[in-house]
Image 1 (cartoon, helix red, strand yellow):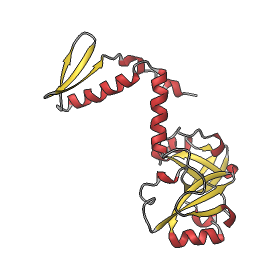
Image 2: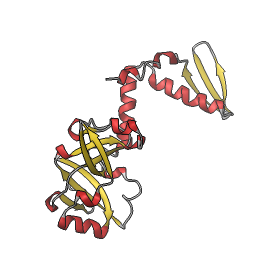
Image 3: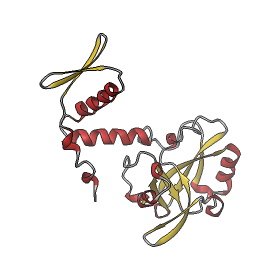
Image 4: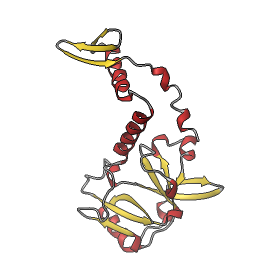
Length: 205
């Protein structure tokens, strides 16, 4: 079973735990996958992903246990558009940390036994802090392993942006670049950014 989460107004959450959730009443989106048409409502892979409602006392976090055959994952950062629908994968095929803002597409009605209101601590332990943090950590780890000096190069690029905005000045020597403002300075090895030109091809399936 896929464990996903939604935030509902308190009264609605209690009602959902008592009578379940009907797809016909909650559907917000349609999509086609492998030639089959689905209606769905949306959920979260991690309850901490909803920054608006997680600290709202008027809403309750509700855990849903969904048959994996009726649950998909998509990248909400690129909705709407064709890329969004191309990002849809079955829940069982999704690799945690692949999308910065993943959302669950729930395509079935849920019985009360599959709906539980979370009070205080979550019933099930969370494996990671939130989806954005996991995504950034995965990207950082992947590129650091793939490219030598990646950490140096990303900091160099960051300070070059600050320099372009006039925040600091640049001093170059043969092998390093130093960024200076008053008595503070940061130094990095010069980078060959040409080695990153193939970065998108790495992910082409």
